[in-house]
Image (cartoon, rainbow, N blue to C red; front, side):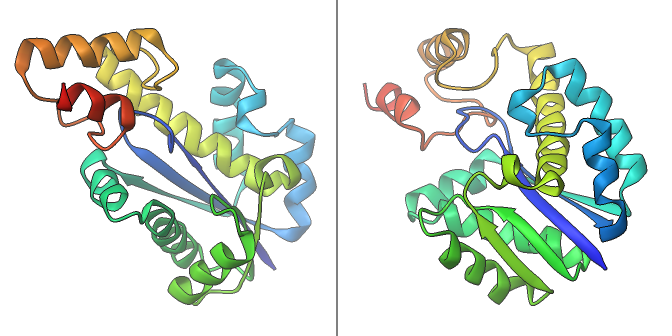
Length: 205
Protein backbone atom coordinates (compact mmCIF):
# COMPACT_ATOMS: atom_id res chain seq x y z
CA UNK A 1 0.00 0.00 0.00
CA UNK A 2 1.56 3.27 -1.14
CA UNK A 3 1.19 6.21 1.24
CA UNK A 4 1.88 9.77 0.12
CA UNK A 5 2.79 12.91 2.06
CA UNK A 6 2.51 16.37 0.50
CA UNK A 7 3.65 19.80 1.72
CA UNK A 8 4.79 23.16 0.41
CA UNK A 9 7.59 25.63 1.09
CA UNK A 10 7.73 29.35 0.35
CA UNK A 11 4.05 30.27 0.42
CA UNK A 12 4.69 33.40 2.50
CA UNK A 13 7.83 34.50 0.68
CA UNK A 14 8.14 37.75 -1.31
CA UNK A 15 10.75 36.23 -3.59
CA UNK A 16 11.15 33.02 -5.55
CA UNK A 17 8.93 30.00 -6.18
CA UNK A 18 6.31 28.25 -4.10
CA UNK A 19 7.47 24.62 -4.04
CA UNK A 20 5.07 21.72 -3.59
CA UNK A 21 6.64 18.32 -2.93
CA UNK A 22 5.26 14.84 -2.42
CA UNK A 23 6.80 11.51 -1.45
CA UNK A 24 5.27 8.06 -1.80
CA UNK A 25 6.38 5.11 0.31
CA UNK A 26 5.18 1.61 1.12
CA UNK A 27 3.27 1.64 4.40
CA UNK A 28 5.63 -1.00 5.82
CA UNK A 29 8.62 1.37 5.42
CA UNK A 30 7.13 4.47 7.10
CA UNK A 31 8.79 3.72 10.44
CA UNK A 32 12.17 3.93 8.68
CA UNK A 33 11.51 7.64 8.07
CA UNK A 34 11.03 8.13 11.81
CA UNK A 35 14.21 6.15 12.52
CA UNK A 36 16.15 8.48 10.20
CA UNK A 37 15.11 11.42 12.38
CA UNK A 38 12.66 12.90 9.87
CA UNK A 39 10.50 15.67 11.34
CA UNK A 40 8.92 18.96 10.32
CA UNK A 41 11.52 20.84 8.24
CA UNK A 42 10.98 24.01 10.31
CA UNK A 43 12.41 22.16 13.33
CA UNK A 44 15.64 21.23 11.50
CA UNK A 45 18.80 23.16 10.68
CA UNK A 46 19.71 23.66 6.98
CA UNK A 47 22.54 21.06 7.17
CA UNK A 48 20.19 18.53 8.83
CA UNK A 49 17.57 19.14 6.12
CA UNK A 50 20.16 18.66 3.36
CA UNK A 51 21.39 15.41 4.96
CA UNK A 52 17.86 14.04 5.43
CA UNK A 53 16.83 15.09 1.90
CA UNK A 54 19.39 12.65 0.43
CA UNK A 55 18.32 9.86 2.81
CA UNK A 56 14.61 10.43 2.06
CA UNK A 57 15.12 10.35 -1.73
CA UNK A 58 16.93 7.01 -1.40
CA UNK A 59 14.36 5.44 0.93
CA UNK A 60 11.03 6.44 -0.62
CA UNK A 61 9.46 4.64 -3.58
CA UNK A 62 9.03 7.87 -5.52
CA UNK A 63 8.85 11.62 -5.13
CA UNK A 64 7.54 14.55 -7.17
CA UNK A 65 8.13 18.29 -7.09
CA UNK A 66 6.10 21.12 -8.60
CA UNK A 67 7.41 24.70 -8.63
CA UNK A 68 5.08 27.69 -8.98
CA UNK A 69 6.72 30.85 -10.29
CA UNK A 70 5.97 34.37 -8.95
CA UNK A 71 3.95 35.32 -12.06
CA UNK A 72 1.52 32.41 -11.52
CA UNK A 73 1.32 33.23 -7.80
CA UNK A 74 0.55 36.90 -8.51
CA UNK A 75 -2.18 35.92 -10.99
CA UNK A 76 -3.84 33.66 -8.39
CA UNK A 77 -3.55 36.20 -5.57
CA UNK A 78 -5.29 38.84 -7.73
CA UNK A 79 -8.19 36.39 -8.19
CA UNK A 80 -8.14 35.42 -4.47
CA UNK A 81 -7.32 31.85 -5.54
CA UNK A 82 -3.97 31.14 -3.87
CA UNK A 83 -5.42 28.14 -1.99
CA UNK A 84 -6.84 26.82 -5.25
CA UNK A 85 -3.43 27.20 -6.91
CA UNK A 86 -1.83 25.19 -4.11
CA UNK A 87 -4.56 22.53 -4.39
CA UNK A 88 -3.89 22.25 -8.14
CA UNK A 89 -0.18 21.64 -7.60
CA UNK A 90 -0.74 19.22 -4.73
CA UNK A 91 -3.16 17.29 -6.95
CA UNK A 92 -0.58 17.29 -9.76
CA UNK A 93 2.03 15.77 -7.44
CA UNK A 94 -0.40 13.18 -6.03
CA UNK A 95 -1.56 12.18 -9.51
CA UNK A 96 2.02 11.56 -10.56
CA UNK A 97 2.73 9.38 -7.49
CA UNK A 98 -0.55 7.41 -7.63
CA UNK A 99 -0.81 6.41 -3.94
CA UNK A 100 -3.66 4.64 -2.11
CA UNK A 101 -3.86 7.44 0.47
CA UNK A 102 -2.33 10.92 0.70
CA UNK A 103 -1.78 13.12 3.75
CA UNK A 104 -1.63 16.83 2.93
CA UNK A 105 -0.87 19.94 4.96
CA UNK A 106 -3.93 22.17 4.57
CA UNK A 107 -3.48 25.88 3.84
CA UNK A 108 -7.26 26.35 3.97
CA UNK A 109 -8.90 27.28 7.29
CA UNK A 110 -11.23 24.37 6.47
CA UNK A 111 -9.02 21.27 5.98
CA UNK A 112 -11.93 19.06 4.88
CA UNK A 113 -12.84 21.52 2.11
CA UNK A 114 -9.21 21.64 0.96
CA UNK A 115 -9.05 17.84 0.90
CA UNK A 116 -12.24 17.61 -1.16
CA UNK A 117 -10.85 20.09 -3.68
CA UNK A 118 -7.67 18.05 -4.14
CA UNK A 119 -9.73 14.84 -4.43
CA UNK A 120 -11.86 16.40 -7.16
CA UNK A 121 -8.78 17.44 -9.16
CA UNK A 122 -6.50 14.43 -8.60
CA UNK A 123 -9.05 11.59 -8.68
CA UNK A 124 -6.30 9.46 -7.07
CA UNK A 125 -6.77 7.54 -3.81
CA UNK A 126 -8.00 8.97 -0.51
CA UNK A 127 -6.96 12.47 0.55
CA UNK A 128 -6.54 13.20 4.26
CA UNK A 129 -6.13 16.93 4.87
CA UNK A 130 -5.02 18.39 8.21
CA UNK A 131 -3.62 21.55 9.73
CA UNK A 132 0.00 21.09 10.89
CA UNK A 133 0.20 17.76 9.07
CA UNK A 134 3.97 18.32 8.74
CA UNK A 135 4.34 17.83 12.50
CA UNK A 136 1.65 15.11 12.82
CA UNK A 137 2.59 12.66 10.06
CA UNK A 138 6.17 11.66 9.22
CA UNK A 139 5.30 11.21 5.52
CA UNK A 140 4.32 14.89 5.39
CA UNK A 141 7.43 15.82 7.39
CA UNK A 142 9.50 14.06 4.70
CA UNK A 143 7.68 15.98 1.96
CA UNK A 144 8.26 19.24 3.87
CA UNK A 145 12.01 18.56 3.88
CA UNK A 146 12.05 17.85 0.12
CA UNK A 147 10.04 21.02 -0.55
CA UNK A 148 12.19 23.19 1.74
CA UNK A 149 15.55 21.97 0.39
CA UNK A 150 14.30 22.48 -3.20
CA UNK A 151 13.13 25.99 -2.31
CA UNK A 152 16.41 26.76 -0.46
CA UNK A 153 18.35 25.76 -3.59
CA UNK A 154 16.24 28.08 -5.76
CA UNK A 155 16.86 30.99 -3.36
CA UNK A 156 20.59 30.17 -3.22
CA UNK A 157 20.75 30.46 -7.04
CA UNK A 158 19.18 33.94 -6.90
CA UNK A 159 21.50 34.91 -4.03
CA UNK A 160 24.52 34.10 -6.21
CA UNK A 161 23.50 36.96 -8.50
CA UNK A 162 21.70 39.30 -6.08
CA UNK A 163 21.91 39.72 -2.31
CA UNK A 164 18.25 38.99 -1.53
CA UNK A 165 18.48 37.28 1.87
CA UNK A 166 15.88 34.61 2.66
CA UNK A 167 13.15 36.06 0.44
CA UNK A 168 10.70 36.50 3.32
CA UNK A 169 9.10 39.85 4.31
CA UNK A 170 10.36 39.34 7.89
CA UNK A 171 13.95 39.55 6.56
CA UNK A 172 15.26 43.15 6.53
CA UNK A 173 17.83 42.22 3.87
CA UNK A 174 15.06 41.01 1.54
CA UNK A 175 12.90 44.11 2.07
CA UNK A 176 15.94 46.38 1.55
CA UNK A 177 16.85 44.58 -1.68
CA UNK A 178 13.31 44.96 -3.07
CA UNK A 179 13.17 48.63 -2.08
CA UNK A 180 16.60 49.46 -3.56
CA UNK A 181 15.88 47.58 -6.77
CA UNK A 182 12.62 49.44 -7.28
CA UNK A 183 14.22 52.84 -6.57
CA UNK A 184 16.99 52.05 -9.07
CA UNK A 185 14.99 50.35 -11.84
CA UNK A 186 11.42 51.59 -11.36
CA UNK A 187 10.07 48.05 -11.59
CA UNK A 188 10.42 44.65 -9.94
CA UNK A 189 12.58 41.72 -11.13
CA UNK A 190 10.74 38.60 -12.33
CA UNK A 191 11.59 36.65 -9.17
CA UNK A 192 9.72 39.09 -6.89
CA UNK A 193 6.00 38.56 -6.16
CA UNK A 194 4.30 41.85 -7.00
CA UNK A 195 1.04 40.91 -5.25
CA UNK A 196 2.61 40.78 -1.77
CA UNK A 197 1.61 43.69 0.48
CA UNK A 198 5.14 45.09 1.11
CA UNK A 199 5.81 45.04 -2.65
CA UNK A 200 2.42 46.58 -3.53
CA UNK A 201 3.14 49.43 -1.11
CA UNK A 202 6.44 50.14 -2.88
CA UNK A 203 4.85 49.94 -6.33
CA UNK A 204 2.10 52.38 -5.37
CA UNK A 205 4.41 54.92 -3.67
